[in-house]
Image 1 (cartoon, rainbow, N blue to C red):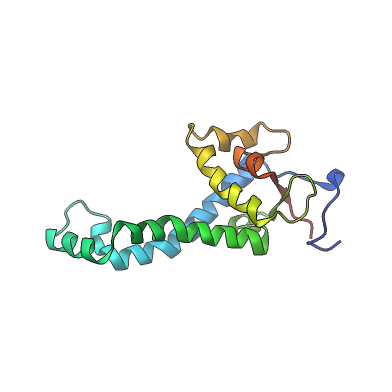
Image 2 (image 1 turned 45 degrees about the horizontal axis):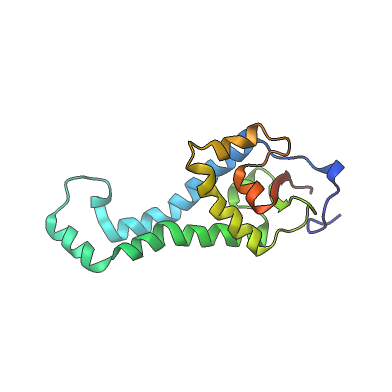
Length: 159
């Protein structure tokens, strides 16, 4: 069986909470390693201190409108994550734990629409005290709310 072929449900091993948590730590480190240098170029040492030169603040306000910061902090990571999901069926963290995202019914590749819904579903999962993420620990198919909204599951990748 190749990696692109759908798996049969009796062959499926759902990835649980702690492995997914480890994958998210890896992803957070990877995204931070990419975004932090960009923010440092823009903000300099003012990124980490409350003692910022007022002239620097004025310069930054002129150079980087709030929209630019929003793009760097939120839009670029979203695009990167969705592209990883589209082309690899996993982020680097999920690849490190040998996991992949698949359609919950067919166990085949999810659609782009499902992946976008899944990403946006993280916000739904996070806001009520992370309950939607913690749901993975208690669900039979190890689905978080974002998975349920998108119709996806995270499974062990067969080699």
